[in-house]
Each structure stands twice: as structure tokens, then as C-alpha cells.
Length: 595
Image 1 (spheres, helix red, strand yellow):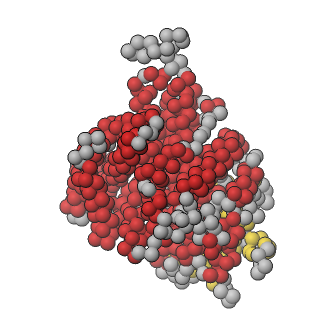
Image 2: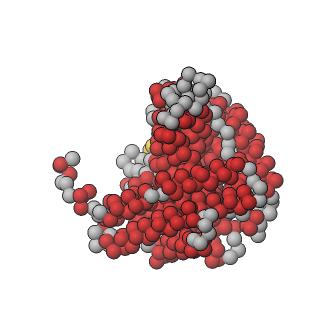
Image 3: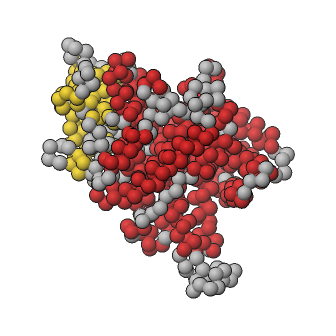
């Protein structure tokens, strides 16, 4: 059975030594999270994930969820009790403002905890994760009445939440949505239609499920401009907070999926269900994107989470599995063969995973801290800059971390050889579970198009200009530091590639938009490598400072891992640039019938 140990020490290093979380003490909630409390919270989250959730991961995969004839769904053995621990610990609302019943702690803590949850049991983690997204949408866009009715019990986890967008005929193109809403004399609406691929759509973990549903009010404009967002509960709450009669929403079936079997991915049927408008009529997409952006960052974290747990198990196996001798001569002469950790190609795979995981975690925490600034700072310029950062980096984090996260689970499986292909070791489950984050919450090709087609030019290119300025300033400031040169010089080269690619799009994509489409995924990954390289430069700087202060060999290992990244992974920016500059001609030349 796979094992998992939450990377608490690495998180503490990032928060304390790389990002200096104490510098945010002026923000609401940060003063309430001193270092000792943060370590205590992370320690408790680690115990929950390692002891309660990780052992259920294989159980959930084997059993899956069960739909009963009356439409009820039961989750795998142990899930309900484990969710009770989530509720008892207040984990869903640790970063929710206190006025809505949360603890008001920094959002960065929620992202860390969600990584731990995803590594331990991704299918389970989706139940509280989706609830957090629904909470975020209601905090920003819900009326005071809706907030008072739903948020207190969602924040505690007594009730859970979902998001309902996709329909059989529409996924990415939400303008094709057919679910309709008919206004009632009392101001409510009757919602009718079918939604598919609804994660956590029906289950037995909580007595009520609060669905956020995109629908079209009768007479609304066609396309996305005519969409509205509605709260549609499984049971309609009574004025005293108790649950009334069942609403007209049922689970028609559970999807038979490649992975995440422990999560109930449902076809949801709405048959005149009572719903209440969130935000204003025809403003549903704007409200839903509050939830989508939360979810996209969370999905990026899922890619990291599965990469981390797959790496941990592959590294442990490589140190135990005896096979062949080192090409430079036997290293363990007292054994019949050397452990495969001695082989360079095995180490290449392990170092690739490790170097990615550490930098990806840093990128997530850097961006999560920006989210805290965007939502909590009293300085308008700081809020704008932080929001620009989030808008620009969200598609990069979602796309790059899930693409590479999946690739890393495959690489980890490869280290196990044939044993990785059978269920007993658990590696094939990581591969299957890691496949869906590349698809849901906007497929990664859409993330790339969003980055190139919208985010680069947004507000006159303000966000990308700020990113370039920060990274360039870092390279210039530390370029003369001999100890940092191995990290900073390759970063400067990669940054130049990203700037060239950006300029190439500016010169070649307006007249021929296919050039942007053909190069978008390469640009996203080029950007991701530069962002990860920047994280490694900052981590190397912090590690060197800690070594100078007498830190242990863990910091030496970090420097070696960072050097591997800039030597072996970061140079791929040149290949991405070459593909971008090749344009779209050969990509688009063949007629459709030639395929």
C-alpha cells in the first residue's frame, strides 16, 4: 500500500525563509497566525491526512460510490467518518472571514492543507474543496439573505457545495447551456434541465448539498450574456435553519470514470427545482468565475499533490528494489544486486519529480499569498497588483502543474516497472487520478488560450509587464553574486526566451490568430518553466543563507535539486520558443478530410 508523509518542513521553509510571511503581519488574519500556530496547524493537518485519509485512498478507488434506486448515493467505507473529522477540525473554513463563521486565517494555509489532502486522498479532498469554491462565490456575489441562510453551515461543513456548469451538449462553450429558470411570484425560480460531470453532486457525507447552477432565465439573451447563477439546495432550508422537503433535484446516475472513484461524479436532473438568484440576472458567468478561479488554483494544487505522493513512493521503492549493478561498479557488494537508486536514469526521473514539486509548491504559495493581499490589503495599488498576478498565473498553475503532475505520476509508475502496472502498489491509481485535473475546470488547452488570448493583453499588458519587471530586477540584482550565478544566469536566459515569445505573438498573432492558437500550449509551459525557475532562484538564495547560519544538510540537498532544475529542465524554454516561432502553417495546412 502506498505511503504518504506531508512535507511540513518544506512548507515552513517556504513560508518563513523564502516568502517571509511575517512581512504580511499588517494584513487581517496574519497577526493571528504566528509561526508556532502555523506549524501546529500544519502538524494537525499532516496527522489527519497521513493517519485517516491516506489509508482510505485505495478503499475509495476499489469500492467507488453507489447510487441506490431512489437516487441516494453512498460513499466508500470510512469516508463519512473521515468527513466528520474535517467538520470537527473546522478545516473547510480556516480561511473564511470570521463574519461568515470561519477562522479568518490566511488563505495560503488553506492551499497548503488542500495539497496535503490531495496527496492523501484526492477523491475525498474534492468534497470539502468544492464546498470552499461555493463559499467563495457566495461571499463575493450572494445577497445578505443567501449568505445568512447558507454560509454558516457550509463553512462548518455541516452542508456541502457544488458547481453545476456542464451539460451533455456543452462543456467549454457555456453559451450553449439549455437549463432554464422560470421566475416565480415570490422571487424564487424554478430550475429545469440536466447537468453532467457534477463532482460531489450527491452523497451521504452531509444532510444537505447546496448546488450553484448556471441556467438561462426565460427571455434572456442567447449565449453567455444570458446566463444567471442560482442556489439550488437538495433540501430547502426552513426559516429556523432546519431542512424542509426534498427539492426537485436528483442524481440520475454516477459516471463510470477512469479515476477518482471515491468521488461521486453525477448526472444531476433538475425538475422544477426551487432556486434563488445569485448576483443579478444575466450576471451568472461573472459570479461563477469567482468559483472557477478558486477551483482552477485548487486543481493546479491537485497536480502537485499527486506528483508529490507518487514521488515519495517511487523514491522509497528505488532505495529498496534490487536490480543490476551500478555502471561504475557494485555499490552494495554485500547484496546480490544494487538498489535501482544507483542508476542515473532512475535518478533523472526522481530528480525531475523532486525539482518540479519543490518549485511548484513555492509557486502555489507565492500566488496564494498574493490572493491574501488582493482580498485583505487596505492599499488599492497592492490589491490591484496582487489581483493582476493571480489573473496571469492562474492558467499557468492550472495547466502546467496538472500536465507535469500527470507526467510525474507516469514516471513514478515507470520506476516500479511491472509492479507499477498492478493495483497492489497503488501507482496505477495515482496515474488514473492525475489524468482528470488536466481536463476539468477548463481543459489545459483552454487555459493556454486564455493565457495567450486574454491575460497577456489585459489592461494593456499590465500583469505580464509587472512579472517581467520583477524577474528582471531579481536577475540584475543577483547577477553578480557568484554563489547564485548557477541559478540566476539560466533564469535570465529563460526569461529572455519568454520575452521573445511574447513579442513574437504581439507581432504575428493579430493578423494570423492561428499563430497564437498553435503556440499557446508551448507558451504556457515556457511561462511555467520561467516561473518555476524564478522560484528556484529564490529558494537557493534562502537555502544559502540558512547554510551560512549553520543549517543542516537538508539545505545542501535543496541547492543540488535547484541546480538540477536549471541545468536539466529550464533549458527546455528554448525548444518551446522554437516551436512558437515556427508559427501555425504546418499545423493548419491539411484539410479536415485528410485526418
